[in-house]
Length: 323
Image (cartoon, rainbow, N blue to C red):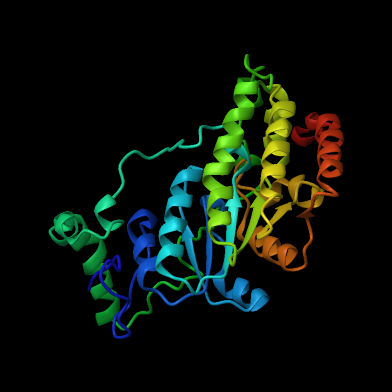
């Protein structure tokens, strides 16, 4: 059965349940047929490869890593690009709230590393694993024996959650926020941002000059910007964005997008389930924007975009959101 595709591609006679991203993503990149990759954190989970393919003429796979830092996603992309020289397109979310983190920041410490390497001698945890038997093989057998279809790539890792201001407020409290002591953008912050973006985006893009990397800053809700202002981190975040943008614009095969001026989306809480996560409809809209080059950042317009961000979000009436 090989439920995580460590050894071979899926058999057409089986129905497979695609789940547990950190177990299955490496197998997808090893053995699926594709020429494009959609990847990122949970901000990429609701992308539909079928929509991407229709707009860009590709044959894509989706590889989300919920809660990941930049390094984890970059390492997976590097493995995929090494194994498949047919890839010429990558759609990649750049989580805006990760710009000031360490280059190797991670939320998860334990990974199934035995699935990621080329060493068959350490595969015992995969071959003799009760959890994989119960949660991987048996559900696939059940789907196959009952004639049920497997998980499509559009359905893989996607979610539907209630959205709206009341839902956002379950995970967001203005009263708990206060100014951050280290709200000044320092030389140490600058060095950190440069290393983070260079190591996790620029180096890989330069290594594969024939691949087009569509990278976009994830468009969070107005509540996220409210929190930045309450914590007095807004100007520091913009400084980090400017450095990251300038580094990425030096890569000729990177097309960088910024949707922070899509105010009808960002300022409508009905599009969000928490301060950051947008609904699947927004993922579809992002694909259309990118296909039309809406929000494209260039060397000639990025400073004006930063100025507009500063003017809009520093002067927004955040109190009005909650009335």
